[in-house]
Image 1 (cartoon, rainbow, N blue to C red):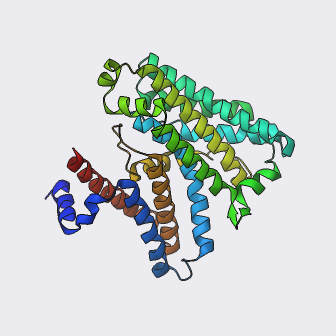
Image 2 (cartoon, rainbow, N blue to C red):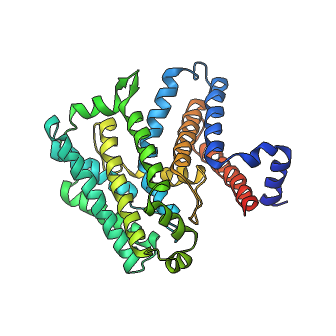
Image 3 (cartoon, rainbow, N blue to C red):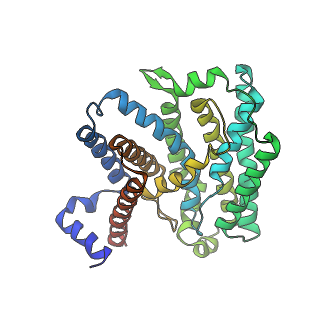
Length: 329
C-alpha cells in the first residue's frame, strides 16, 4: 500500500475532504488543534491563549510572505537567505535607532532597504546568471551573516525604541497586539498582489510553465528578479517587526524562522514546484505550526518526539493535498 492508495481511501471515507481547499484544511486543523489543547492541558482553551498563539503565528506569517512568492514562482525556488535577512534588518534598526522613538521610521526604511538589496542580488544571480536558487540564496546567507559579524564585531550594541513594543507586541485595540492588525493588513495586500495585479498573474504563469509563459509574452527574468526582491523586502520588514517583539538582537535571531517559513507555505497548500498557492494558505499554515509547537511544549515531550510528530503531520497534509491536485488535473 502506497501513499496514493491511502489518500484515495481517505477521500472515499470522507468525501467532504475532496471539496476542501488546502488553506481551509489548514485553518480547520488549526481550530481542531486549539480545542484539542484543552484535553492536553487544563485552561489551554481561552481567549488569552488564542490571542498569544495568533500573535506568535503573525511573526512567522509575516516572514513567510516573501517565501510564498518565491515558491509560487517555481524553478525550484526557495529563499534560504530569509533568516539572515531577518537578523540583518533587526540589527540595523537596533543599532541605528538606539532606543530613539524619533528614528523608528528611518529604521523601518533601513530594514526594508537592506532586505531589498539582498533580494536584488539574489534575483540578479538567479535570473541573469542562471545560478540555482538554493545555491544563490545559501551563498547570500553566508555573505549576510559575515557582514553582520564584520559590522557588529560580535557585539549587538543598541536598543529598540519603546514605541515599537507598544505598537507591535503589546495590546493595542480590543486587547489585541498591533502585530495581528499588521498581519491582517499584509494578508489583504498579498491577496491583491497575487490576484489583482499583472505581476500576480505572471508569477503563477512562470510557476506553472516558464517556457509557455515566455512564449506568451511574459518577461520571465524580470518577474523572477522582482520576486526575489520582494522576498528580501518582506524578510527585512519581518525583521523590523520581530525586533518590536524581542526588543533585542542576537546572531541567530532569524535562523529559527527559516525552515518554519518554508513549512508554513507547504502546510498552506502551496506547491513546492510552483504555479499554485496563496498567502491565505501560508497564514493558515503559520497558525498550524504555532499551535503544534504550543501543544507539544504543553505536553512536555522530548525534542525527538516533537520532531517525529511534526514530520508525520506534514506528511499527512502533503498526501491529502497531493490527492486533491490529481483530482483537479
